[in-house]
Length: 274
Image 1 (cartoon, rainbow, N blue to C red):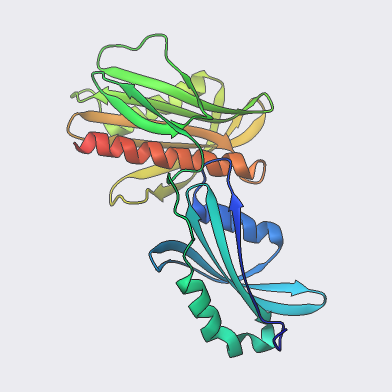
Image 2 (image 1 turned 90 degrees about the vertical axis):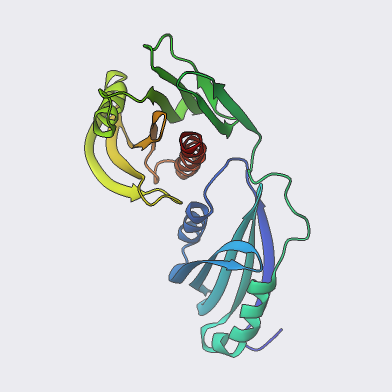
């Protein structure tokens, strides 16, 4: 054993649901009770990573750990390099080399943690996107000309814990993003969802213009979140509305709902940009 109890470990966790790596890492650190000292996104040795410096109190002693996480298909790898707080700087260069140089021995057949399906509606307007096989498809009874759509939902213990409303709208002088967004909110209201307040507006990864509005909602007496965005393109628009629990109620459902929203968003953006 090295002075200061210095150690380097490599572990992995196998996922059952698609999640975003930053969300999973934040949940891991919070659940473990670690104190986050520094966090950054980085690329090490070809791996996209979440690089964190945390303080861990164990057995009455304070340790500093550099924890680097990377996602490879259904696995999340953690490279952890730690030492007692007073000794950490002595090993910092060795720890840095360890977390930067790590590479999984075997690659992943898929970028996703679970089997995926592809939804296709030739339209017009067309819809095509990937989604996890754990989510079920609910086709609408009827839509007016110039519109196509579908709903996806995830159930757990007999309860719906994620619901995605997808609608494509052909380009028309009568349609514009703010009106479409209001209609998506009306769709959820007609299903018994009560938007309480718009809590925040987020940028969507990879886009300089697309934004998502997040609403605090109440549905069936239970608090949740509703994320709504409208994408524009040459052929028209695609609207997405994702309903999910609040994070502290059901972290896994919240994490997978946001990841599915992200996957469908990117596929629909590509479709509109063709």
